Length: 218
Length: 291
Image (cartoon, rainbow over all chains, first blue to last red; front, side, top):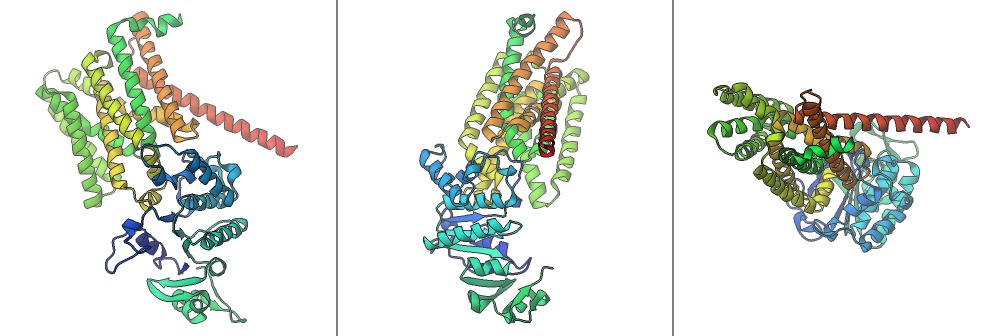
């Protein structure tokens, strides 16, 4: 499912609430049938790669292993099985050959792939991605969409925030239009209508001659 | 020659204890210091550096254990800083400045009421590493051991929080507890270091070897190992140099300060070295591109 809306619409806030990291003013959130606090560990979070310090002395493989830290536990070190799973996750996103490099030397797109690999290695049931396609190259975008499709085929639920309608179309079946409140929710085709988009984005939604609606960057 | 410089001074009991204390502080400071740098907690170390001073002064004036005074002051600092920044929403830097000046002034007032003002002040500010007694070395060793065990157990999780706080929270870790653990480790390190090398020089033990190692280490564990080795070796060299200069050359070099100077020289050499390697690498890259 794609969370679509302009900057400041509350996409990140909603994701943080689903993770149980935000106090709720009202209402209730159930994640995978239980409260967010209980669902932790079964939910994986993929932040934007550029919020992380590129100077941090940590290798690509170590970043992916962080996804398994709950399974590894406090006193144990990462075992052979954990490393095999982490390497397999890196292979799926196409950066296995960079496993021993420092995370920060990778390109923005490669770093985003590593963070997806970390979520894959966590073997979560729900994946929350915050603007995963921001500032990444076309190859990475295609690859991310492909890996996400694979994950969904194995029964993993995927929720991503994005303001890229084209990518949302390719990567998701359902959309939630958001601007301070839910404006529409449903299958991609029904939610992304010209009227609803205009309601979400205001003046920056433009209907083209062919009938397609695009959202211009402000 | 080398034997005379680096080995013979330690036939003296006080030099041996000083070396042991410096190495213990080096190991502790190296490990905790790397966490301090990764979490950008240098400000906390600096705050403690100054606010522990009145704790020492009160304990000193009352004839109580310096350790106790320092621990109390460190605990008060952490609570007050948390209160200022979270409750009153004062900027961390500003809160820090207020605390540092207030605590330090309080400390000076207490010390200045005593007769041996300058000598007391000197000891509190710069420490007396050569006066370290057996009991103090044992206390340092015990505290270092406890802190290192705790930090080692939580190592993975501390690194995770430092690298990606949101992920740590999403995985369900109690990030606040980990923060508290690290703050306590920093406070404990500051307290034992302050007693030996004084409030002014202490920060060098936490930050300088770790900062040097940060330039070389490719992983957190490697960075820590490098920091520990650097602190140990440079501490040894610094102590030896101050002994040689003071005893054999007639040039008085304060031992604590000489150790810190050795740390700084190490940092400069490593910094210059990495810059040079980078330049050469870049030039080689250009040459390749030109071909």
